[in-house]
Length: 332
Image (cartoon, rainbow, N blue to C red):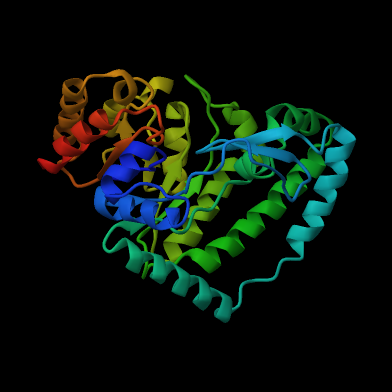
C-alpha cells in the first residue's frame, strides 16, 4: 500500500491517537508507520484561515490540509520577465552540493526511515522544468503561455536553468541506502488529454528533461516513477523511451485505464490506481473491496503494483471505505 494521507479520521485511526496541536507530526508519522507500506509525503494539519507572505511576495491562505494564493505579487508580463531574469541568475549561481551537504541529507533521511520503522519513503522527488514553472514558481498556465509566445528565448533559458538546479537536487537527495525509488513531479495533463501537444513538449525539451532526470537517478541506483495527475496515456510511450520505470497516480476519473496501460507496458511499476474521485469517496465498502481485489489479481501478480488511491486520501474519503480498501489488500 502506497499513499498520501490527508484525512483526519484515517490518520487518527492508524496513529491510535488524535491530533492535539502539540505533536501532530508524530501523529502523522505513526499513521504512515501503521497504515502504509510506502509514501512520498506526510503533512500536519494547518490552521484554517492562516495567512502569510511567501518568498515570492504572494499572500497565501491556509485550510486544514491545503493552501492557495489569495493575492499574487507578480501580475503583469513585465513583472514576470523581471522576476524570471533574476531567478535565472539565482539558480545559475547555486553551487554543486558538497560531500558534507550530501552526508547531512542522508543522515536526515535515515532519521525519518528510523521513525517510520519499515514503511518505505521516497525522498528524492525532482521536478521537470515545466512543472516547477507552473506549480513550484507559480507562474500559472495563462502567463506561461503569454511569455512562451512573446519571449520564448527567456522561457527556454529559464527551463535550462531549472533543469540544472534539479540535477543538483538529485545529487544531494538520491541515496539508494534510504530509498530505491525516486519520483518525478510533473503535472502536465488535464482530464482526457495532456496540457500540451507533443510538438510543444518537444519544443520545451520536455522528454529530454525526463530522460536526464532518469539517467541521473539510475546512476544513483534508484528506479524512477513519473507522477502526473490527469490523462497522460498518449505520451506514455515517449516517457518509457525517456527511461521511466513506473507511473503514478493513474487517475481513472481523468481517463487513465490502468488495465490497458498494464497490457501495453507490463514492465512498468504502477503506483496508485484505486479511483479516489468517485469509488473511495462515494462507493460502498463492498464496491471498494471488489475493485481492489480485481486490481490485485490482474495487476499485482508480477510484483510491480504499489496499490493506493489515484491521487491522495483527502478528507472526502470515509474511514469505512479506506478500511475496506486496506482490509482487501491485507488479504494478499
